[in-house]
Structures are given as structure tokens and as C-alpha cells.
Length: 149
Image 1 (cartoon, helix red, strand yellow):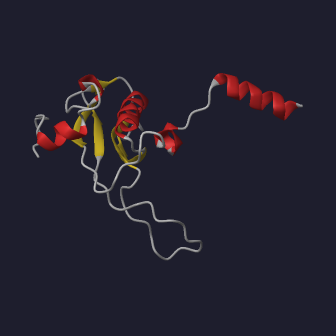
Image 2: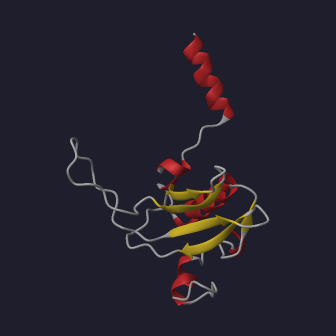
């Protein structure tokens, strides 16, 4: 599939048929901050039924972020010689988005791969993924009151 020009081809059309076009990441999109880019991609992931995480990044000498890679939660492989074994959740998925800081100090999408090499979850279970779990202000207040009593 041709990801350079983001043409809606057959496979991409099937994946993105259930969501609005403005919710689909496109190469060249710009964001004010890294966090806004993460939130946008996380909203996209919620609609497609997968979870994301922050991955590799590079920084300028000044400490400012130069580029960042957001990946599917199933990207990569775990090390096999560990003390406590866990259920294997990583299968080498290549779905990702890469943002880079440009001269105008905005973060621009420079890479977007949407294809997963695993089955995504059902919409009824998407909210359970780590990147989609949220706590409201009311819930925070309840926790604080219970903790102080």
C-alpha cells in the first residue's frame, strides 16, 4: 500500500470505513505539542480498537524533543530470559505514527502505518486498554475523600 501520499486504497478503506476522515492521521498533520499528537493518535486507536504507547524518541542538544514514535501496544518482542514470565502481548506489530519537530516548532506527522499483524479487540473491550483508561475529576475526589477518612 502506498503510505507516502495517504491515498485511500482498498485495504485502508476497509480499516477506516467506520470512522470520520478527520480522525485518521495523515502525513503532514501538525500539532502544537507532543501530548496533543499522542491524544490524537490515542483517539484514533480507540476508534480502531487497539491501544498505543510511546516508543523511541530523539532530542536536540537543548533537551527539546526532536521526534517521537507512537506504536501499537503489540509492537516489538519481549526478552525471553526474565525472572517472572508474563503472558506474551507483543507480536511485532508495525502499526505506528512518527512525529518530528520542524522549523516552525510544531510537531508534524512524518510516518503513518495503519496495518496490524494481529487481530484488534472488540469495541466493547477497547476501554480496558491502558492508553484508554481514564479517571474523572469526580472519581479523583471520591478517592481523595476515601483516603482521608
